Structure formats: C-alpha cells, structure tokens
Length: 442
Image (tube, rainbow, N blue to C red; front, side):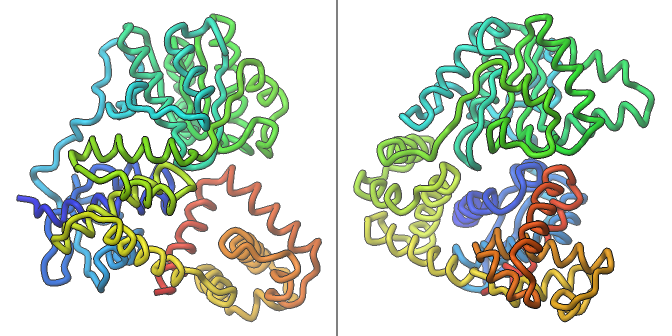
C-alpha cells in the first residue's frame, strides 16, 4: 500500500518536475508515476514498466533527487520500481470508438474545470465557440501563451466536448504529427497518413512551434490544412508564441494560421490565481483558509503549473510535519523552496564547463579561437544557455567566452534558438545539459 506521505510528496514533486522537463517527457515518463514509500531517506517511485524504470534511471535521476531533496528538506536517495497496482490512469478519457484520437484526453481538462479570468476570457470563449460549432467559426483557432497557462487544458476540453457529439477527433502534439509523417514516408504508407488526418472532423495540434524548420513536415501539414479547411473541418493549434513570431515557418503556413482567430492567454491576475487555488484545493479535498491561499497567490505569479505546484508543496510540508496549514507554515514551506531555487542559480563557469564536458571537450577550447565544427557548435550552445539561464548580456557572454564581440554572440544565440525549435535531438541535448549543471548547484 502506498504511504500517504510519499504520495503527497511525490505529487508536490510532479508539480515541480512538470516545469523543468519537456511536456512530452512529462506525459510519457512521469505523469502516471506514484510515490510508493519514503523511509530512512529512501524514496521509492512506482512506474508502469521496466522500460520507464531504465529511462528515468538514466535521464532524470539527478533532477528527481534534487527536487525531492528540496521538498523534504534533506538528502534523498531515489529508487524506481514497477508497481503492480499501477494501472492506466482513470483520469484519462477513454477514446470514443468513432474517434480517430489515439491519445486519450485528461478527463480533468474540461470547460467546467477551466477557471476563467480577464487573462484568458477570450481564449475560453473562442474555444467553447469552436467546440459547439466546429468548422463554422474561427477556423483555424490559434491559441498562444507561455508555459503552464492553460493552452493544453483548452485543447483537451474542446476534444472531449466534440467527442461527446460522436465526431471524429485527432489530438496530437507537433512532434507526434512529425513522427507520424516521417513514419508514413519510411513505411510507404502516406495514404494511411492522409486518411487518418484528413478525415477528422476536428484536428487539434499542441505546441505547433516545434514544426518550425521541418520542411517536409510543413509540406504535409500544408496539404492537410488545406483539405480540412476546404471541407469546413475545424483546426485548432496551440503555440508558445503568435504565428508572426514563429521563426523558420513557411510563409504560406503562417498566413493560413492567421486566417481564423488568434487569441492569447496571459499570466493570471491575483483574483484568478486565488480562484484556481480554491478549485485545486477542492479537488484535493483539502480545507485551506483563504488567507493561506492569498499568501500563495501573492508568492507565485508566473503560471498555473507553478501555482498548483506551490499549493502541493504546502500540503506536502504540512503532512510531513504533521502541522496545521497556517499562513506561517505556508510561508515557511515556500521560503524553503525559494532558498532552494536561489541555490540553483548556475554560474557562467559551471555552464561553460558542463557544456564542454557534455561534448567531450576541454573548457579552454570554448574560450579559444579554434572553429572546428564540434567546438563552434558547443560554444554556441554555451552562448544560448548563458543567455537563457542567467540572462547575461551579450557583452558579458562575449567576455566569458574569450572576449568575443557582440555580433558573434548574437549570431550564435540566434542559431541555436532557431535550431532548437526544429531539432528534437538538440532540445534533448540542451535539456540534459541543464539537468547536469542544475544538479551540481546544490
């Protein structure tokens, strides 16, 4: 039987991990895991199969250890094991027999559970409009906004609403669409690909920004888009930025993305944050005083995932200390997390050394004049990470990398920023490098 404290701690950890790994990795490897036990500094995580055990051991062990240590306030050893009682998550919406959808929806992501505020009112209204009358209004609907603000929630809500009306729905991420397209070419099954995607009543593609730079996939999407739009089938896309800001996207696709309605989701205001916390506390069947929710809402402002993660941390802290949840306890638990986050801030030297080590190079080579392909590429990755993770100025980055000028640094950053949208392999490399240097900042 699962330990209650382990379950609560792991839920808090998942709230934090969701912000630190890619959406695809979270959905595939972490979302359905459970906290089984926490005893004598040993934390056991239950997963569905041995392949997941191996993947987590190899890829995310350090990050998970770091996250758990921050929550419990001390060193933790983590072990992954297959949990016999771990079944498919009951929260997942079963695919309708007429639905072309092969990725079940999260049953929690409905219109009724979406908290509406000034930050997302238009996006919610537009999503509900296309769900009620697919293909009739706002086609395509393009929803954009930062991470953790509710884009995926709205896409799942649309999909579940439409399926209830016995219409065919496909929901995929841009990477899944790309993988399907590549497989259809490799296996010479392009007709199957066309039949799958071009007969749907509603096509939802999440994180469409990752299709940028993939010329063949954009070609496939272009024709899919045209066929669906001509047949008055509904298309809904989500992205972290508006179409005009999608680098390496073909103009003909960009213009089609702008045919319908473009709506954005902003970070929630204070009142909306409090309402989200109240709804989340109700879901968790936890009675939490309003002054505690106000404190959390004032501390966490960026996005909904961080907000819910903070609430999970407060609940886990209360369980671990067997204490009543008060504003003082909430402040203490969040202060520890804040202190942990401040210790996580990397230095320029650490980033440069980690990048060099990852690519099998001496750090001095990144500071030198050599322009071998591997060295130049690693140097540009360092430029990108120094800017993204530390917010360093172009001048400071140039100084850290051997006195390079502003234009060289800007070019290197732009090159990696463009390629990272188009290359899953590069995204994985950058994520792994970040996991390594953040694991060394404790």
